[in-house]
Image (tube, rainbow, N blue to C red; front, side, top):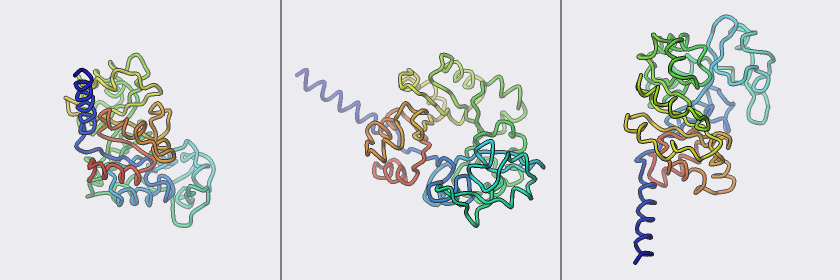
Length: 287
């Protein structure tokens, strides 16, 4: 009888985990960069076409103040140029071309502007996650207002609420915002609760090298407010090894995507958007 009872309890717990999310949103890291240059307009359009919910991109500023899309501090890795975006005027940087995943310079892929990306995705259901945007919130906000896409953008940073309030007090109530929290840090829960006391975050991006934080399993204090749990499946260093490569290259979904879903991730950021979408659709977790 005890064995039978334990089996029922175990099965019920597994069912709860499997049905914890009615839908899991997919965020494409730097767009569909496996099939187009990373952070290119084509990469974002391709990701949107496959059905992702969010595209992630990175902001930099040119010498003359144009907000462009670039991850690295320099343009050397991803373009046929050298130096920093701030070394170039927009007209100059526009002459450069992005490299593809093999490091080859492409013919038709200039560095896009934030304005171009937002206009390309305007009117779709796709949100845009503005990574590396902290120094440029005011400029980004102006562009979003001008393009009528403010509700499609997610601002983010790893800084505590007090820093956000001190730097951008006038924007707090006007933007969609998502704090990034390192669960390895002893102050992680306070970091989260400070935000919850003072504003309504869109969600919390949770990064961790160890999967032992109590917040990973005891996060009702977050979700009951309507804030979403965001977990990255890219790079093992962000998710204690429950990553895309484990899911795809080793075909171990149990310890990768299933593990993330079981921990109530409403959003999963991935470097394998098509494969993750296909998997979630099979599980009836994505349209």
